[in-house]
Length: 522
Image (cartoon, rainbow, N blue to C red; front, top):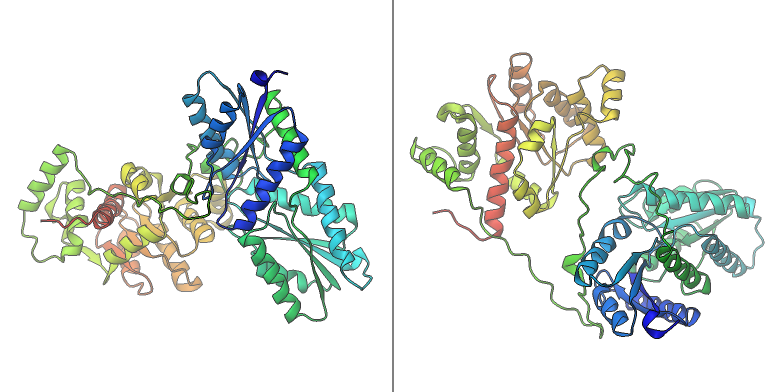
């Protein structure tokens, strides 16, 4: 193969603030280069470290490559391999239209990685002077933890294969973050299972902050439980098996055989609990920290986000000029004005604000929650769709409504409650306290929220209860008003509706954005 026809392999790493992780990744790239001498091999990082993936591709092309396989140097297919790295490759394909780009699969549960995990476990067992049967040993496999159940499930699959293949009495899975159980909780649970020995295996490629924390947690457990032997197995690390799998993934990509696990991908098929993410636009989330660390290890200053004040459409601006001049607003607190005037705009009625109730500090609590928790839970999709999309994107706020999900229908039938109430119960289960709850349609949703608050300690950051109707509406709003445990916004009577509930959130998002932009209304 001539130099001009050589394949370019770009090993795309995650990147790390930990120099040990960066050093080991680059040692692995050198091993790939040594084991694929006919290819042009370079490396780049998604986050923090340098060079970036784009810089690695540029170096690869400068060395003569005319087709490039970008291979994720990550273990499992989650957000980085499904969203961020493909976004990089797509941008590169636009920048270099004459180059053939191929995207490889992550390492996944390759047989060679299973063999390497086996080596690490045997090495750990050899450090002990005691002889303990595997049947009396619990393997604790620690994964990274992601928001993708497919990737988390692969960790559990790895644990099961090692448990059966090596004859452990049991295997317990925990995660270093995002997924549960977390490491400390997982180790405590494993210690209560009655085994004489625990082998703690980090399912990680390289050293780093998280691996160090895993080992520290194992040391803490060993100190607390002196009757249990706790062995720390090595992470996968720099090894010919890892290098060979990366090379294999590059070859598969060029041949069109890169196999992603699409059958349980939450972006392609409805997965229990993640139904709303089917077809979700794939947006890279790593751009703010791409190349943050220079090659000499110094940290660059990330560009601060730039916020601009809310700019209404001219017709909207004229409407609010009329609303501001249409009645005396001096009796209302200044913090309430944006929300109140948006409710007038939504209802077309200046008197709509006369029976509004705000618990003390409700607006301030709601704005803080939108900026910190970044999630709005609604009872119906009409509230969700009434939220201003541009504001949600600028502030990075997610929305969730489960009223149409399959599990909500099942819960509704089994418990004899409305789908709106079942959706609120699911939101409590999924997200806990870190939500702003906006109810605009169903009095039963308010009733269920109040029940969870009073009887089960739920503490949403703010509850907006403005349903419209004649059956149970007044009573549910009165019940919310008397619910002293949480900040709340409601009204009396039968008026309200989904547009009202959405308008309250929109008003708070406008105030939040203007505060971030340093805007002071005249």
